[in-house]
Image 1 (cartoon, rainbow, N blue to C red):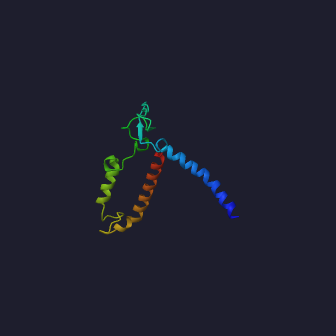
Image 2 (image 1 turned 90 degrees about the vertical axis):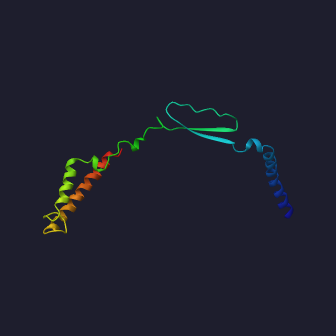
Image 3 (image 1 turned 60 degrees about the vertical axis):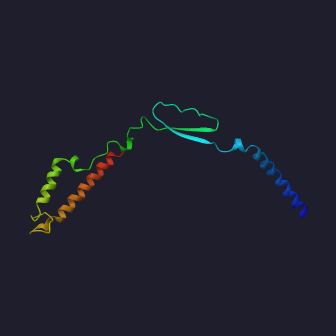
Length: 139
């Protein structure tokens, strides 16, 4: 029984030893390349040829121009004050100046508390309109 196990082990180890011998002879040619170049190509550029046999050139097409803004970032709506309509700016100024007046939602003066619900409803409606506008612009 032990003899059969030793014979089986020897038979299985034979091909493994033969493979190790082949690898030791061909280690120079079967190793990884010494140089790998990654290149981004724009427009109609062609992939350059390797300068030696030990070099690999990897090319990828990156679009029309290296200076062009990607489509997903183009024509983004601006949210700053300069890009808002004058009517929105005037309404903001009027709301600030109404502090203390009735329906102004202000802790200052009489009747300031009466406008808080109205202001929350107006704010909710405006946020809903803004969400619909942003959803319509997504490609």
